[in-house]
Image (tube, rainbow, N blue to C red; front, side, top):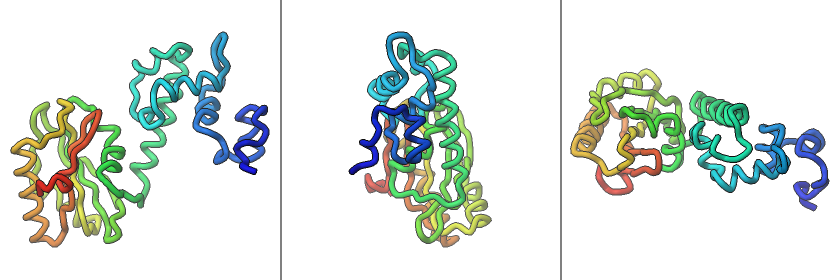
Length: 220
């Protein structure tokens, strides 16, 4: 019998204590985070409303303003949700070795940057197994441009014993089509990498709502 189906009459906290957190549903976990519901709606029902209104994937980057629009979510509950996911993001970013598999993963790793008003140019330094050794912000540009010199990318790459690099930057306009400058910078980095012996394997442009992989689009 699936342990998730056991003791459904018990509250999430009781089931967590008895069976462990891994048996709880997403709604159960959010209910534990919220602690209380609102008048006329218990905490588990409120948690399900949050998941229905804002998908679980989007909760990691949802704004405070959007959360408090949900009936029953006030300043305290919205703050608890945002703080919880911020801790998760920081743990993921600071983890010594984490696997990056796809442009989608890059987009997720850029969740703290992708909706910024300025362009942030970021490098993911990878080892020979395509695992992240470190993520580093290389430059912060204006609303329209981010100036990147190869030495700013490859100096920390060499210092961190990098085998490969994925670069990424955000477009504040929410448009992910590469600009002429994006293409030019990518070509410069690829050529510099060939000389140094560190491959630039993708450039992922991200925005609040999506991403584009220059490798997938055969633009590099």
